[in-house]
Structures are given as structure tokens and as C-alpha cells.
Image (cartoon, rainbow, N blue to C red; front, side, top):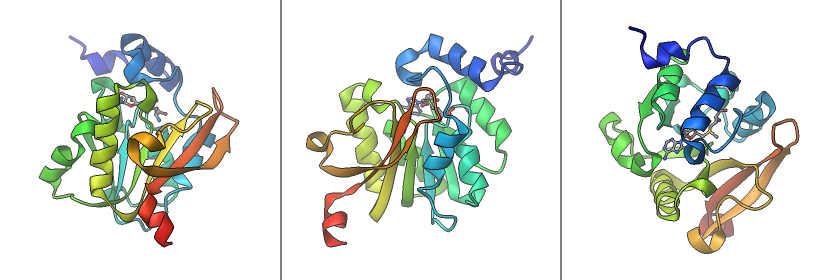
Amino acid sequence: MKTLSASFDRLPPEGLFLARWLKAPHRIGALAPASRHLARAMADQIGPSEAMVIELGGGTGSVTSALLDSGLDPKRLVVIEHDRVFHALLTRRFPLVTVIRGDAADLRALLAPLGIDHCSAVVSSLPLLSLPKPQRLKIVAEAFALLGERGRFIQYTYGAFSPLRRRETGLKGEVAERVWLNFPPAAVWRFRRREAIEAA
Ligand SMILES: C[S@@+](CC[C@H](N)C(=O)[O-])C[C@H]1O[C@@H](n2cnc3c(N)ncnc32)[C@H](O)[C@@H]1O
């Protein structure tokens, strides 16, 4: 009998994405994967010599691929993905990267067995605004508990406004880049702790 992930093998990333969206629209949060332009704009926020980068919501791997293409060492990248089909796909596609299946709201518990308690950047494709508020705030709190003082949380959004509200999180965000060559057009946001910005 064919396994679930094998039955998705023949689908192109766009078809697979749509199939997973039909199953859990709020959790997938988009009708199509990030374009290579959007994926590159996300990777542009990351330097090749980062201590440790955590990617949240790897999906079909477009951002993962752009991060590796930009020179990031696969040993310094961990991807968290909730969906089992996407998790299986990412594991096959990126054998040198650690891909963990789980909820980003449990980030520290997921990383603890690997001995990871710190990272320099979090790169997120999560549909933050479609997630319930307690889960969204937990994800952000978990990410910033790992991020050092100068750590960045990078997030793309299709919305016109910030994907993280300052009054909910106390974080300072700015648009790092707008990407028109994506469906729909997107903005890459960069968030840091307010104190880190004020001290800079
Ligand atoms: C917009 S899609 C990611 C698209 C990805 N950048 C791509 O181009 O394929 C959002 C992803 O976040 C994952 N996701 C949603 N909620 C999650 C959670 N709480 N923890 C981990 N992954 C989650 C979904 O399964 C989906 O793969």
C-alpha cells in the first residue's frame, strides 16, 4: 500500500500546497508557496555566518532552499513544520538539515533534545494572523526566549499591516523588503526587541 506522502510525490509544489490548504486552510494560510523572489528576500535577511537559524513553517521548502543557496551551513539550520506531508517532503528534500515535526508554539521543548537553547535569527512563514491569538503570542514568546539580544524575527505577510501587533508583543517591526513578484504580493518584516533597537 502506498504511504500518504508517496501519494503526493507526483504533485508539483503548487499542487501539493493547494491540496494541504484544502485540508487545513487556517494552518497553511496561503494558496501557493512563496515565490523564489519572496524566498530570496527572506534569505537576504540572514547572513552566511549566523550562529543558528530556526525556520518556522517550512512548507514545500522554498525559503529553506533560498537560505541554503545564500550560503547558510545546513548544520546551522533547523526547520519546524507541523504538517506531516510537508515534514516528510522537507526531510527528503534537505537531508543535511534537521527538520522537526511539531508546533512552533512548543519551540523550546522541540529544540531542547538537540541541545539548542539559543539562536541568532528566526525565519517564519507561519500564517501568524490566522492562528488563534494565544498560539500566536506563545510562538512569538518562545522565539524571543531563544533569540539573543540582537536576534531578529523575520516574517512575511500578504497583509497591508504588520503581522505582529506592537501592543500585543511590545516588539518593534519594520518592513525590510516588499516583493511584488509573488502571488499575492508580500512584505518581509523584521522584528527585534525594542530595547535592542533603542540601545543601537
Ligand atoms: C504559508 S505556509 C509556508 C509556505 C512556505 N514558505 C513555502 O513556500 O512552501 C505556512 C506553513 O506553516 C506551517 N504551520 C502552520 N502552523 C504551524 C505551527 N503552529 N507550527 C509549525 N508549522 C506550522 C504549515 O503547515 C505550512 O507549511
